[in-house]
Length: 267
Image (cartoon, rainbow, N blue to C red; front, side, top):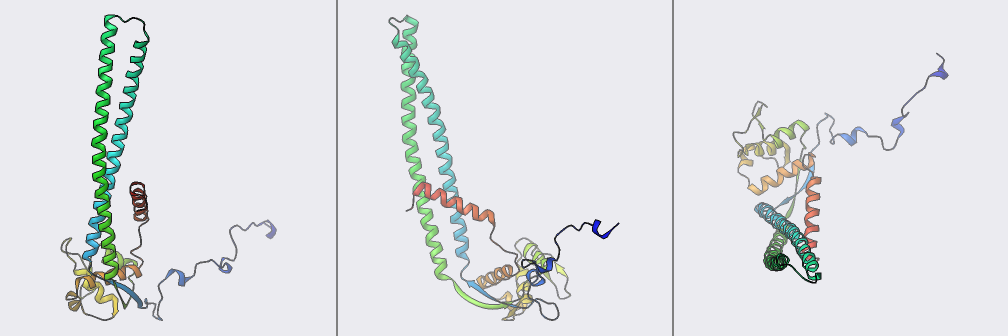
């Protein structure tokens, strides 16, 4: 085979490409021994009870929006069916009224049809009034819940204090063990399973291992303020690239905003 017959495929000299990934792009910043260097991290410190309140208020708001949609769709379907029936009865009445003379049977049919139409119209009017009251009640609930949510967000924003620390990010395995499975390492370095779903022992071990400044023992972290423990744990999760905004949560929040705008406008 001649050299000119050989066909080379693929892109050549990829290392010369400006967008080519490098080791620095892929790994954490490492020291001479190949260990991750502690990073200076800003953490938001505040009472995490506000997060719980915001979460419950969000569920309450979403539930009210869902009920609003459901009631609106049911009412719309009922109105369409009623209007079709009323229209059909109206056509029958018009056809009978066009006749010069009516048999006894046709007279009875006309009377029955007019009665049915009246009943349909009365029922529709009654349901419409009930719908107006119900939808107004739900809308009021939505307004109140949204106001509560906005007030809680304001309270959280005002309560946040920014503090700085130094911490080492978790490896993929450590992040899975600590943050996913809630395990921790004993004195011999063996991973220990949590006793139950309420067991938060792993947090103190995680912080004792990963936080380099301030440096505390497991016992000292056990005695730390609960909201401080949670704030620092979340900060380590973020620098470990374990915790990131969920695209689905972003979409849900966007849809929630669209529903609120459709119901309440820009107020």
